[in-house]
Image 1 (cartoon, rainbow, N blue to C red):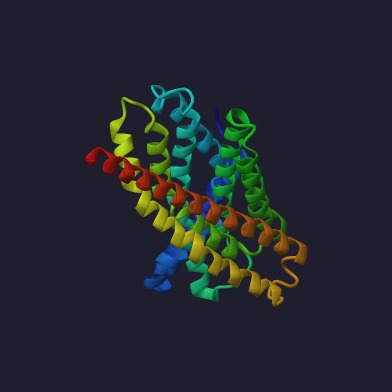
Image 2: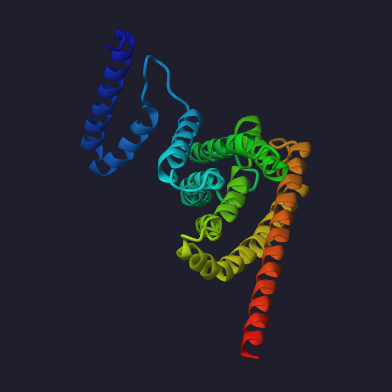
Length: 300
């Protein structure tokens, strides 16, 4: 299928401007060529039939494909009860660590030029990371609705998280530094957590002794890592964010009702995370104590 003439002319026009800009830059100041190239690149976009495809649908399609490949191919030999959970872990792996790097770059690049602010206007890079995360949570929400519709806790968590991301991205277009900072703290433990979750899902399988060893090996360091990030660093960052908004630094760009809603959602998520890891520590110590008692009885 050939492109319409208007589309060809638009692409040709952009190419001509690009070449002229480079030649002009080289004549006046060769050192500025690379900078001019970046400016022209930022002004050019891939246009198909005079429409550009937004990031959000592309990211959503990507995560959906990864989930289906995981469910139908990667984990096809796993038990049907744990295949959905394993597939969810795989898309979480593709989201978590990349989101940490992308969000860090987006936040620190804007902070280096204008200074860090919890209420600053979103940059294009920050909006892209928000789209990336919205797509992931939409896919995982669909997973829970289909396979675990009674899991109200996780469904509620995903809906609340989507509310924060979507309002930051599309409603006020401010506050991405705050939201992405929280995203970094939330996802920096995700690689370890997903490995621990996958091992835990297989540890009850008699044919997978390796899963039991990996689960037992990962549990203490993962619990400690998670406790420091979610129990210490997360609340500290959250407290600074709320204090900034309470002082009125977001007046005129983020309505009071919205940042209060964000605070309620994030505060609740942090509290649930702390309770979750606390219960895991208790369970771990109980298991260790039970094993020790069992060994003592054998010795006697």
